[in-house]
Length: 129
Image (cartoon, rainbow, N blue to C red; front, side):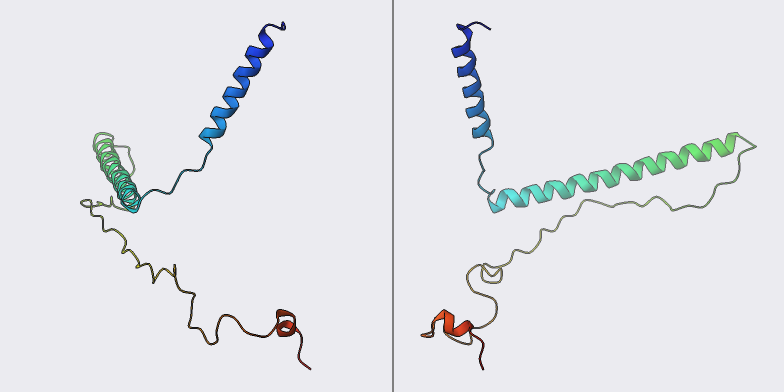
């Protein structure tokens, strides 16, 4: 590498490092509406997977029944689990806790004494004799 390309390469490396550090910046948490929408989308995707498995199970049963019907040497079908129909998609969002119930503002339990005392910390933690 010649000396002419060193500043250009260094500049390119520094700009790439800045771009990577900007990409790693912490994003703010999504708003509650977006989180609820994402949870519903995840539930719908899981339901779609169950529907796909149900359809696959039905088609496999159909193929196996046709094979047994057309092949006289085929063994009788072993009774296995029947295909489970997932039913229609139904999503009920989880109940949101009020802020107080979530413990965001108040400490757990009730206070039995004031938060500060006149006793120094060293004397409070010293063993009593």
